[in-house]
Length: 370
Ligand code: NAD
Image 1 (cartoon, rainbow, N blue to C red):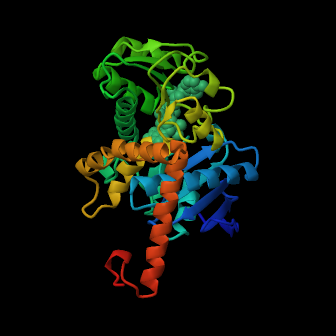
Image 2: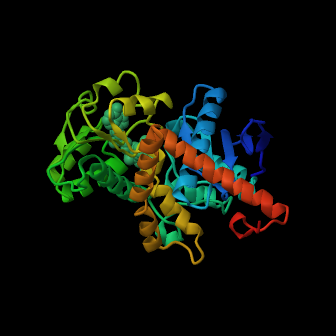
Image 3: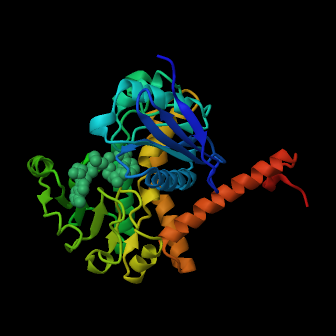
């Protein structure tokens, strides 16, 4: 088929490159945002969503791409941040031609952006994209990829929950602790299993009643109505469904000393990090505790290819990263979410400085005289 893909640059301040791809033949209407490649190529998933307008899609892809830059900076994946969105209803627009056109759009950036699975896209979709570009990650292990990232995200969150218990109670044991999980999907259910194995009592809420019942049978999870999970008394509230659940309405109603979960963009606004701290709730910044998936994917870029052992060793550093942030937060009297943003910004500024120095022929900072 002759390509009808039209690629247009959208100038957006603060972003290295944002492009719109429209392909009338397949119906593709997509945006890729490359936020920052200082630390490496911009990696972030491809989301499909029935956005009401292109402005709405642009807002979302920009926010998500920037979030990926910060997540990868703190997790030291050696990657930058980017994201892609396809505008459309997954039930209506998905087709082979659409994903091939998307692959061509990804390929047009020459490796500056690397795609992966995200909301409403699957490994099968990525396999099609792979036919048009090599800049794809998260394929099946048998195809040389790192596979499903969710179990790795869950492992990182589990370790983060234990670190938070240790920080608040002086003992990181799960035995006897109550954990309330909002959303027991791919990540939430794997987290629930680990917590139950470690001796915690796990409460869960999900729109999918069947999934809840299955976990009740399999691991003894206690089902809780959706409206009650956020306000039930517990030792840890673990949001693993939606973003923006920490806001003016919910924060005063929390009855937990810890919020530590997998969902992205948990704070409705940055100021809600302070609102949590003011109520003495320890917050594990979302993009730090949920970095296990991106860490696992990033290992695909290691010399020699993907190695699970390398991935697990890196994920096991998440508790230390969290403790460092909580220490900064305590010492500087700022919320942990602000401490995480500052750390990410500092890592990026240092890398930009080192790049400039190298371009001017200067040796790295630590090796300079005088
Ligand atoms: P998922 O779609 O498999 O699971 C989400 C679950 O939440 C579903 O079971 C859904 O029914 C449930 N849910 C939706 N609305 C709900 C509500 N109001 N109350 C209770 N349950 C509700 O998604 P996932 O892959 O498990 O990811 C969960 C969250 O973690 C998402 O926010 C995702 O962006 C984030 N995250 C996931 C990964 C990963 O590796 N999968 C990595 C980083 C961040």
